[in-house]
Length: 366
Ligand code: F6P
Image (cartoon, rainbow, N blue to C red; front, side):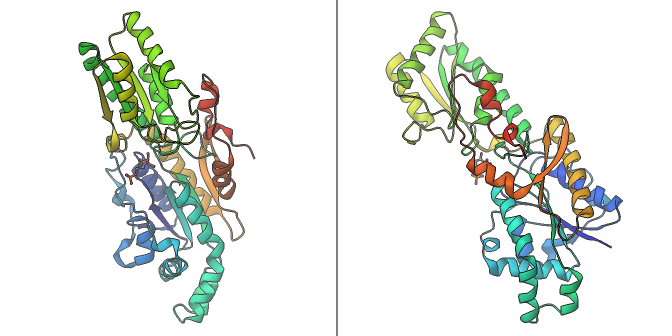
């Protein structure tokens, strides 16, 4: 039979469990031997109990749960060739030559490197008498598929990453909650939103939550932004608005690349408007908890497609990212998706919402 393994890597995201379940059950249905690798790439490096055979029922009752039931890790060992040698040996021991990884761009580029090195790693393992020539011959290639799991929605090649929709729901709920207490006191709130270098979550939640101002890395404000922001807030107050909310991306910066922090924004508002201002850092609540309906069905569909992709791949199939475009599931070359993510200048002009929405996902064309 065909041996397949699935793992989750990097920051967890809501919907990862749905994706794992989709991969496992589809692969079982297609007659594969399915394994889960626990604790991300570290589980591949360490082997032993961290690589387990899974059956249909092993992924029961996880569809609606946040996080990832097979654990995740930011593995340093797998970044070293020595770690990848161990990982290859552990896979060959178990007859696994197909791998689905659910993670961010770092995790996915590591996956493609592993695929490219595969033959060389196996040759070295034979030389070291770690595996036999017959074992190496039986696993001539590693076939891979990547799913993008990250709340940040920061990868070219898919409209939505797994977890981004749930995170948006959580953030908007928090903004709604802040708006009611802000309105009661006629206060200003500065909300710090996650997203690493990507302003997607901040911009979309600011629009959905009716915030007054948003600061995102892709649109570093021109000089004098402090005055313009305060003028905006003042106008809102004059028009009878009782709550002011400014959304700040954790990666927000000015034109010189200096970070703009939530606390800096608070100080500016207090100084210019003489208003009682509070900072709320949403933090990891954005990443935890139950996945939205979208993150359940979309991730299930993606998992299903990833299992089909790796099980139908042959030795010379290039590594793919399985993503969503419009109402389709698409397979795009993994290397290109990662390269484009790093290359595409992520800058938009003020007020260019369409540009902002296309920041990452929409901009991929083969
Ligand atoms: O990539 C997901 C993310 O939550 C980012 O939004 C954030 O910058 C980072 O991970 C936080 O990492 P950690 O969980 O290691 O604190």
